[in-house]
Image 1 (cartoon, rainbow, N blue to C red):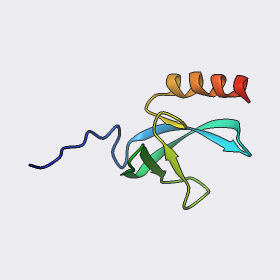
Image 2 (cartoon, rainbow, N blue to C red; image 1 turned 30 degrees about the vertical axis):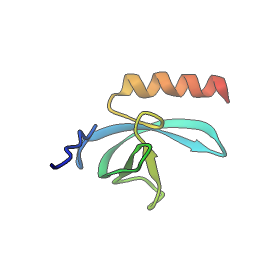
Image 3 (cartoon, rainbow, N blue to C red; image 1 turned 90 degrees about the vertical axis):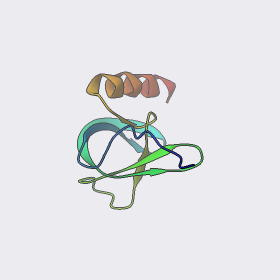
Length: 81
């Protein structure tokens, strides 16, 4: 029996991300998905135009499907930092 995965996004989709430095959120941005991968604990997203070539983002933690979700999480992370 084959296992079917539900992807939260696909290559070419627009997503919004939170850029972090030294554990603190700096700003939000929009980019296109280059690659989607799974680990045992999360869904990893690689962005097409991001300046850090090998950086991956975690779905629901620092990359989101809508700007509203991204902005809400950004404000939450700024308060916690």
